[in-house]
Length: 384
Image (cartoon, rainbow, N blue to C red):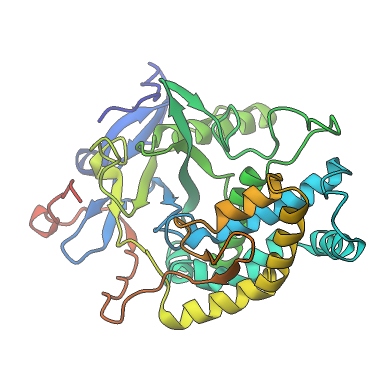
């Protein structure tokens, strides 16, 4: 389908000259004055793309770059603890008066020592897709991006849950804190940024932009990435007193689904989409490792102690609600069982069944100055 916000060609804009044969095989359009090219899927499972174009690889987060929806709710648990820590910085009355001095001090010390980046870093070998490091190493020429659909639409208007006006992941809440009146870090936004940051470090991806944010359930608008690239080029040209670069771009979306929730292609054009096998759960061995790692990050006995202390003092306290949300029936990681007054918590990661199909390797994209014969091209599939 057509780009939703792509700017079409400005007449007179100069671009690199690509041989006609490559143009005919790989060129799809011009967005933001930049010639845009697509890759070609070969029957062997790898791709080729036009040489002398800039390769931009865009990875969906959930089930493509990292495991499962919301990374098995690891992100939810870690951002909840980040929120506790942030609230203590702004509200001296966050801990109810009835909480004992001993538990109060233990809670304050725990929050003070909590490092979300270190927590993500300790479990990144489990969360990141197997073969991601090798995929990055195989494409040293590529510029990487992460695309995630986290904002939502309400009656036709986009509600920006995690992004700023530029559509990249944000950092702060829109309003100052109701108690301190100071600017407040948004734990939801921070967790998304730190998750991607640590995944990039683990995989060897350098100098990636902040994640690009879309709307939940809707396809990814790759023209926005071309626009961001062109804005950076214009800034560099202005700084250097030069003409903006018009180098052609090959852009590829790696996603675990062909279609969005409205049965539309995940990318602006089907030829830009590289469908990969979804990474839905960890192995049984990794499940054990993840449970042990989460116990080190947030021990369940400590979580229970905090939950009961806050709940007995103030049953409707925001921390109580926070813990109940991250351990409700929909959670795929932290489970809460037993009576509300005396529950028990346990980490139960979602794991693959013993007969689950192993993940296929991620494809390799090779630059070519001569396209392969059409008889070697794979047919395009556009439904899941």
